[in-house]
Image (tube, rainbow, N blue to C red; front, side, top):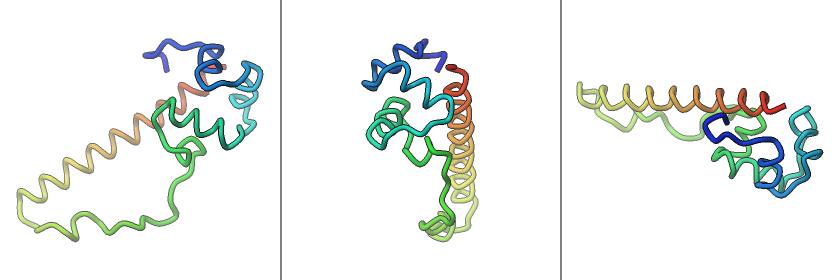
Amino acid sequence: MRDREITQSGLAAAIGVSQGALSNYLSGRLPKVEELGKLADFFRVSTDEMLGRSPLHDPTPKLDSFMLRDAPSKKVIAKLEEVADNLQTQITELRQAIKELK
């Protein structure tokens, strides 16, 4: 959030809600589905991520089940896992930045 240097009023204008409505969201009140979608689009995350949800199970097969278990494949898998971990860290930091908008 700080990288974007946006204020609450700026964010409210960007997603088309009043500053009071945004303040309510930041205080824990859930936005309407439409506003939640606009927030997710603005922050480039899914609505599930905005709600703090994670899947109960991963419907996609594990990547390594499709790949050979040779050294180059293991290196690719390790790199993809690193990227996924970094993305999760960034999402967590984004959630914290949103909370700090108060």
